[in-house]
Length: 108
Length: 419
Image (cartoon, rainbow over all chains, first blue to last red; front, top):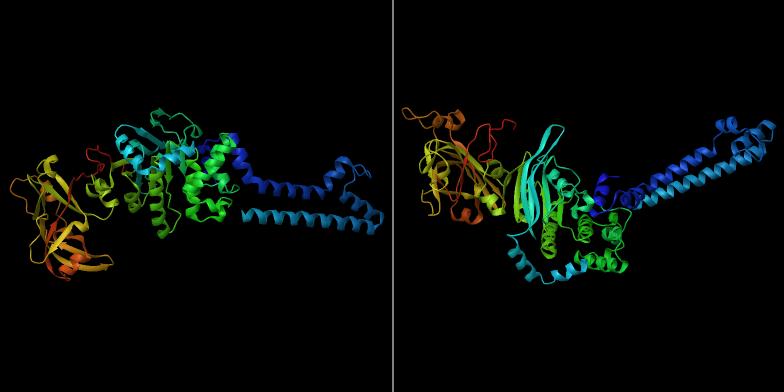
């Protein structure tokens, strides 16, 4: 965003906080939402740090990637695939949401 | 509050008369000896001017002349190194932008993209927490004023450049600014829209009667928008005056050449005439401020040149010399002629100061000095001229300016080798 928006807000009489709340933050809305979704998507797929820090306890610290890993090791390839498909759908949804959000922001 | 302003303006006639009366007494905005430098580079040097109630002042200068910095200092977006800013008698030099009550119309308009027209216009009132009813009334009045009532729910990206500009103006008028500042308001628009919007804004400003300062590098825009024009060069005001004054009585060569075209001839001041080589032109009144023998510049506009094949010139026209027509161009509304004046080098008299010979001693100048003249259609059809014709050349109006070498162009300016 250009700094002239913030300068305009200041000349109109807004305090710094009002400028941040009414002008800066709304302009960054798209970037913040996109960042949050991407971070979430990345976190869902996290494997290494999860298994190192909190182990692989079923129904307690077991995340979806760990579940896939465990089932694959046990030879239950069908169960691993089922969860993998759920994850794939999930990421598809997130990206769809991103594209829709971006389209809306572009229209503005 | 905004409503009151609009009601007042419906008596436009009365209002404008009272402002003329008030003009001499109140300064809406004063800039006092403001200087500013960025990292050792002087951007502004001792800027002084006043804007009176209801007046529009244009700061005219090339890019990099410092005009935008003046505007930003008045708005409070930049702090001056020295000097003061006074708005309606109140010193605001140390106040932040938000407490100054100045309306800035940015070049890009800086409309808030996520707010619609209504929300943009009401922003100043909303952050001041005015009652909802007052805000609603103000929005209605302002939308009517800038003719955008049917676009009230649109977003800035759905509006044309001119409409966006009107939203930006309405947004600042909402909180009744002390002064309106326009930063290159027509820079982003095409030539045709520019001319139309210029007139619209001029009419709008006369209606709301808020003093305004424009910034532009376009001389035509300056002449049309300004009640007064300040010509700025290298961070200094070269001249400030009405459009008529700066155009017809330029005080420096820069002002003469920046506002429209001008011919320059270097000459020597005599008792009652300016001598240019072998030619001379009577200029007793203007020579009073020069001593005889001083090097001067004769400045005149192409449209003030009068040509005559018979040698007979009208009464209001002072004869300069003869010349030959070298080129004729037809440029639509007028005809442009290049002339070469007969100005052979003047031989210095015995014991005469060398200054007299300085002016005409280059081969090019000995061959004759080229000047440009323009003739309106009526003149053209009255007396057809052809390339090669010898004509008498007279001037209906001209200026005699000091010819400082290596000095500031400002009359009386001190030696300044910086430029």
